[in-house]
Length: 440
Image (tube, rainbow, N blue to C red; front, side, top):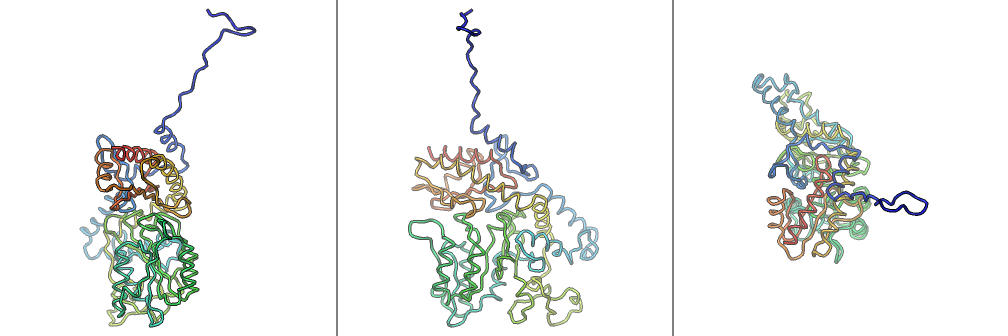
């Protein structure tokens, strides 16, 4: 035995505590997060012996496991009741869209009569612009962001041409400041204050599809109104992603899709919002169909519409029930968890992924384009990889590492940690995989 040190017991080697690995820390964050993941309630594409880490929910959300049974119920009613399913089904088809009214309103911060689920996103943009793009010789312009999604650009150009204007002259595209990647809300406000007297319509993406930037809806809406313009919002990347308060923000109108963060399936139905101050305005031009009229008199088969003072008056046709069933299931899931809780988890996931990606980008000629402030972004980080075609990079992420991300060529990879099913461990997998493919 070794001699005892003076005044003490024999010397002992102090044990050193093993430090957790990054992967173990990620799993610990998942285990201790206040909002457990609902990943098990979704069908996750397979990879090798496991599942992918899915970061493309900003393009197409995952399929809820419960959807197959929900669709089966509607198919059973169709088989059992045929046409009588319109009034006798377990969820009668004639009034099915009314089931979605209140949960859709909660999702976007609206009053129930201000919203309706119908059509697809670009169809709704056009229907609403029929009512709210009213150009005059002195005020003909439509203001959009320079990085607007192409379908928005096509829609506003075609609307301008429909009114006899040259789109190249009346479509104003606001770009970020020189050397910056995102359009600042304060720059939109400043433009409207200085040049807004020729703007008839402001139509911006609340969350930009390319950068993930979240614009200040309330400030821009107020600035647009102060300039005398109507203000509409494309919420394709905002609905189900960030908390929205459309009514309180005083937005004139908005439209969104349901196949991204809302997980309602490819090409599924979209939503529309019209502020209640416009609902009884009979002077607004509208395109009309059978579903535009008052349902109490619909079967009188009258040749003219009986108006309703709700967003329903922008409907055209009876809704496709199988698509609507998927939207209803999605809205039920969002109600169960609550958008506030999902948004809080989204911030935690995105901040963790950001910290990991900062380490990946350092020394690899890559950078995060998305704003750093949590209040200026949704559940998305866009990474620019200089001098590399990101198509092959994202293919390798998927096939070699089981990480599904989105390529925006030539050089941007979009990663969206959707909080309904993404985990901290997924974030660790994504960062580790990106480092590996960038190093090769």
